[in-house]
Length: 327
Image 1: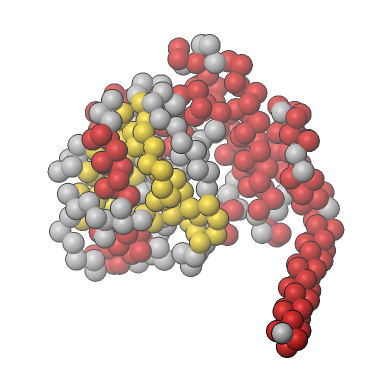
Image 2: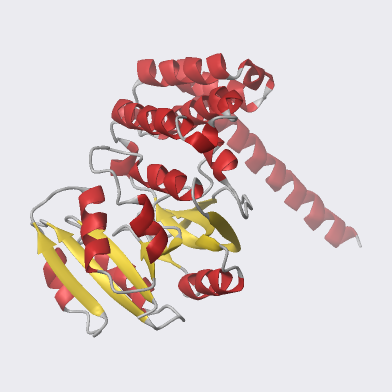
C-alpha cells in the first residue's frame, strides 16, 4: 500500500459523500481510505456505507475531536505515505499523483504540498489561496506564514510522522500548523505548483471562536520559536505575530453581520498594526478600518461602487451599439 488517506468526520452528512468521491476518483489508485467516524449522530455512516469501494475502511469511536481522529487514523494506516482531508473539503483528481511523484523525484523531502482554492457550501469557486513556492528547508518561512493554509493539504512520509509524533490533542485549534512546523524543523518540503486542494468555507466555520483560535495559535508560535532550529530566527517573531493577527482580523470581518464581533475585530486589528506599523501604509487597511468601525458606511460605498461599475458598462455598451450603427 503506497498511500493512506485519513478522513476524520463528525456529523458530516451534507459533504462526506462528495469528499469520499474526490478521493475514490484520484488518478493515483494504490491507496486505502481510512474514515474515522468521530461519534457522528446524523446519517454520516449511512452515506458512507452506500459507497461501494473496497479501499474504504471505516472505524467508529466516541467523539474526541479532530486531532484525536487524525491520530487514530495514523494508527490504522498501512501506507508508506499519509495524507489527511477534512470531511467537507475536496481534492482535484491528480492531487495524490503529483504529490507522490514530487516526493519520488526529491527523496530528500518528506512532505509534498500543493496550493489551495476556496469553495463555498455549494462547491463553487470563491477565491484563490496563496501561491507560495517553498522548497527544501522551509522552517523559517513557515514560522512567519502558514503557506500550506489548511489540514487537507500535504502528503507526508509515514516515517517522518512517526518521528515527530502525532497531532497535539490538547490544542483546540491550530493543530495542523503545529504539525507542519514540527515536520519543517526536521525535514525538507517540496511544492507542487498547482491548486489541488478545494477548501470549503461555510457560514458556520466563519462563526468559530476566534479568541480560542488566537490562544491556540499563540501557544503554537511560542513553542515553535523555542525549537533549537529557531534560535537564530527570533527576529521573525513580530512578523509572525503580525501575520497571525492579520489573518484573525480578516476572519473577524468576513463573518456574517449577525455573528460579527466589533470589539474582537478591533483588538485583532490593533495587534496586527502593533506588530507591524508599516502595514498602515497599505491602502487595503483603509477598507479593513471601514469594515470594522463603519460597516454601514462601507456597505453604502460598496453599493455605490457596484452601481457605478454597472452604469459604466451600460454606457460602454451604448457607445458600441451607436458605433456599430454608424459604421
